[in-house]
Length: 270
Ligand code: NDP
Image (tube, rainbow, N blue to C red):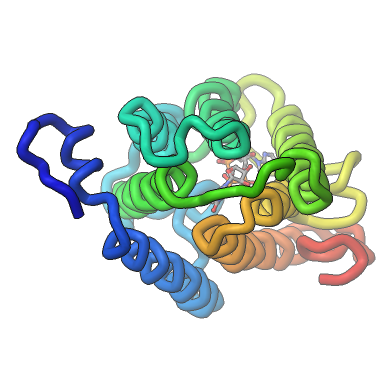
């Protein structure tokens, strides 16, 4: 660690930079993987309390739109702040491109997705706080890794790992956005109920939007090749496959004519 004597938030980040923080990020990454695994066990018994499983038992109910904006914003603002401070590798091209992918996703999730929601169910305060803390923590983890520690050899952006990962990220994001668009358009203005989603990847899985997001972050992890990005992808897989399983079970219980050959979240497999 250096000296924090020159004041300011950026000086604090420069002071924190060093092998101890590098080790801390690694430990946090293992923590994130463990958190995903434990959450997936818990979610076998309690459905993730928001959306159709929203309940007052988990605190005051906040309107869906502002809750989504506020809880997701840290994943946009924390890495942006870190990039503005500049880290040891922040100016390298691969790092800028990879951080750009992360920021693009969260610019959409925090600023566009919430405005498009139609008659979404309110979010309990407890779920909101958990999501907010997760986004701040993961924003720091991915942002700090890509601005300060991840180093790439010359030609990384033309290599097979980056190109395959980037395509996975791009296709995953397209599937995620398209599937959320299908869900949104199931409701006419004023309707709050649920219908069977059809079209796109919903022909294969109940959690098409979640499949897109999982693919997106595994693609990102391959393009980054960092423990931090891999931990995030794994955590996303644990959490979103649990939510997809709950939705799948819910659809089968509610709709007699629900397509029986539809898988949960991974086409043809699960
Ligand atoms: P859901 O599929 O539960 O809901 C998405 C929206 O569509 C909600 O507004 C919901 O309304 C509506 N909707 C869903 N199913 C139907 C249906 N059958 N008929 C009518 N309307 C429907 O997704 P989430 O809210 O869990 O997630 C939203 C986005 O956030 C997804 O893209 C997901 O990938 C992402 N996400 C990412 C996480 C991560 O760890 N990276 C964690 C959680 C979410 P209502 O609110 O009334 O249910």
